[in-house]
Length: 74
Image (cartoon, rainbow, N blue to C red):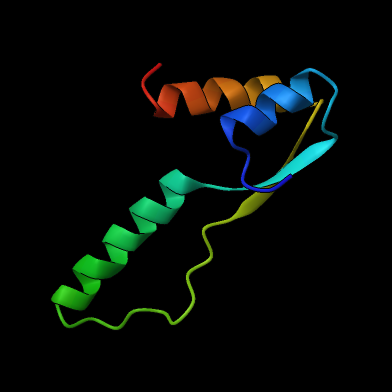
C-alpha cells in the first residue's frame, strides 16, 4: 500500500496488507508553509523539499495509528 491511510493501517492490523509506504501529511503541510513564508520574504527556497517517508508494517502499525489519531484530533 501507499500513504498509510487509516484504511491501510486497519488492513495491516487485520493481517490483510503487509505494509504501506507513508509520506507525512503533517510534514508536507508544515514544510510547505515554511517554504511559502521564505518565498514571501524573498528568501531562496529549495527546489526539492524532502518531507520523509517510512514503512508502516505490523511492527509499528499501532504507534503510527496512534500518531495519526493525535494529528487528526481523535
